[in-house]
Image (cartoon, rainbow, N blue to C red):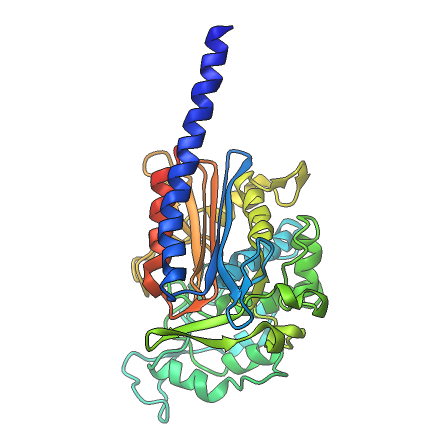
Length: 396
């Protein structure tokens, strides 16, 4: 009996020290930057081995009205939307609605006319293009190897600025029609370049499902996971939960977008599967828990194990040419391949320009989420510092 009691006392002390160290270090980092006026506020969240270990708001969601950050605050999640879109598309894949290596042109006719910018072409006013060596596949859209970019000051980037007519009433279909008038940056499958591909994947979901992207995603993923505060806009009755967005510039925080006059207050015409989502720490954790459990959440099967393994497996191992260094990339998410036995150690990504980030780790059975609404991208190195603390204060 004494042995059992001693075991539980030791376990309690271990968990308490672990929690205190974690909280002390996160408080020092996050509350410290709030007090210095470098960030307005944020929320740090940690889930491990079946329970919430840490869930703490810092600072303010609205500085001007002195409103403290709340645990159920709604955040713009930018590129953390990509994995949500990928999971939604994979529901259709599971149902046999498409094959990963089918050409996109089978479903989106505009892809039939694509060409690639010639290496020697340096001027968008006198274009030189070459034929595709192979068709763009659906897998290419999932993994950012289709040939698209994300802007920039090269020929293709400048053409995006000229030919993609962004407006409040631009739809996903119109976006795809615009972007497919621009030559691809490289031959499909020859390079990994972070791009608009997930937005195009969102349109493919609309074409195949016959439903608007946000409607389909709600039915396929959000409702089954009870992600009640996740979507692409914030209803009027929840608008008071949306954080303000600030930019740190000239040594002070400047309000960029207040919740009360946010463009997110109404459903957008362009449902951006690449970066238009909003969510909460609790909602996003439910999605990550589902993937951590290989497709199951609270006894409910959302995706098959095989589909989740596909989503989290490194899809770009054979591609050495990459627009920036990544250990690996699956479908809509960065991945760290296991060193010795195959599989995936952890998944991660971030949401610029807001500096949101998340990771889920299979070895540690852990989910970590940091939600912020501060620019510029990479502000204070907070995302990396947060992950470092989590890694050092959690054990396998």
